[in-house]
Amino acid sequence: MLTGKESIIRRCIDSWYTDIMTPLSRWKMEKDDEEKIWLVLVNELVKIQGNQDMEALLKVILTDTEQLIIGKRLLALIMVNQEFTDVQIAKRLHLTRETVKRLKLRFRHEDDLRKPVKAIVRQMEQSDILKSLLKKLLSYAIPALGGRAPRN
Image (cartoon, rainbow, N blue to C red):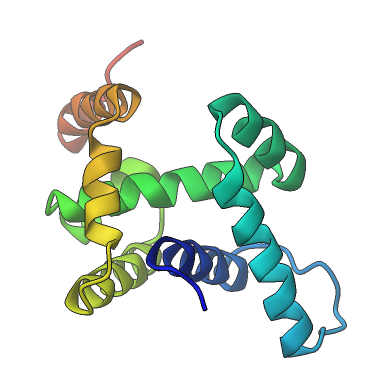
């Protein structure tokens, strides 16, 4: 049985994999084997204590594109929680509105089920790195709406 945190990680990775990740093979595994692989992944990720260890592992198992996609989706969840519109999120993160809409629906569904997703997102919002990134995105987006992109 998956804990709340493991269940959230599972659903996030499942949706990322089915929406955008390149399949490993055109031959499907048995569902039971897929579940066992998932449980091993979640159990091992939960055990990792240091940021450097987690970063090293993720750089090996995820391509640069997959890392970026996951990061953008996490940032999108934060923006959903801060009540940005789908259009604002899509434009600022260069995501499709459909992707944002699906993330928002899953986020709200999890919240309705009293799952800890919203608490985890609130915790992520406290990150200084994310705060500065959001500030930068907002400072770019406001002039860009008027047709002028700020110079770096």
